[in-house]
Image (cartoon, rainbow, N blue to C red):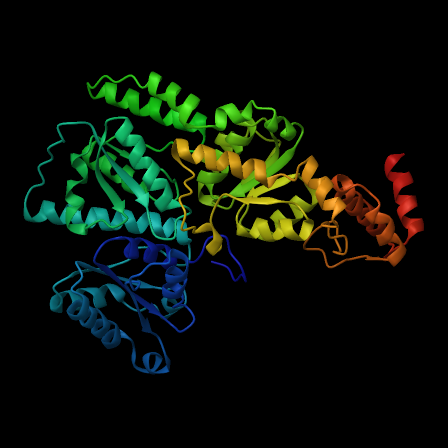
Length: 508
């Protein structure tokens, strides 16, 4: 745990609450001080949900600090049990309230005596894991709790479905385009003639979780939530799982081929070659577009990629292998998954970046000067400061990346959305000409060699006027190079003379 004013992944309790609020008829009690209870507002705003977020804050205040919080927490659990009649109540502290080191397991046991609902304590270390790791662990905890509960009362007898079937694991609240992706995943499995047994946790009932082993295999579209659950089911019931994210034509083909091989091992022979060929040629326009004259405008363009491990790795592969774009470097803030990420992208880019410090990423972007950025909302802000276009491909995001319209990133329709995003993220020749013609370029911002540097330089009016005469498609680079030269030579004011000197030295 560290003190920061901005983070790529939120604190652990946010991950637990995302899982709890995704299930149907599950209520979460958050043991937290005022200030940690922003989840309800955030989820209501971003998800645009018509229903109230099923989370109640049990506030830690001065009275609680004086006499302890056991009575207050238990009262909140029993009150919500009577008011909402949930199937499950999940109690979670925050990293702040964890400092009190109270015996919350005892609170849960006491409350369970008085409630009709099941009550569990989220089993995550709030000091050591982030939002994504906590969501992964909480989902596994809930699944294992209900499967073990059935095993205790009656021996769980697993009977597989008659037709090939799948569980989709990891579609949850506040996920990046998760609900749009789910539509395309349903279409994909329908086309493959594979029935969907369960989708968890989104709108799933905890009382149906014991049916998960009835499926032939599990599918985990996002590595950040669902892998632990798939591994648990594999260990307990010998259930195979597929964890290739079907994002981009190559990944979709690889995922389908792995499913085909898995079905073959289960004595169900399928051949999906013609389906893959048909979808690639006529449903997805990405393959055709990547060979079109329009896409030749991207020849020689450079990009950087940063985001969660799932989306950053897939986008890097799409840019390099499908669109022919040079990825200068690719990175992720999922430090816990860095080994997998490095293996996926190490041969696709010059450098792999593993960090959760946005200042480092800002400095890297400023130094490498790509033609486009594909990252999170933070990289979008960085791109605005550097006048570099950015396509958002991963959480964390703002409300514009929770669109009401249908915009999947997975599946064959997702390939069309991504192709549009890539093409529109680059500032191309005609757009540069129009921006230059109508004065669209902003030449007043002060840039430095790094975004986090406190050093800056000023421009004289004459130098700025001279800068406007430079063609728009190279103006930003000239400006940055001139400022780097000025900083290196300790010029605090860029005049015409400094501009000419910089031009001579840089071109010599």
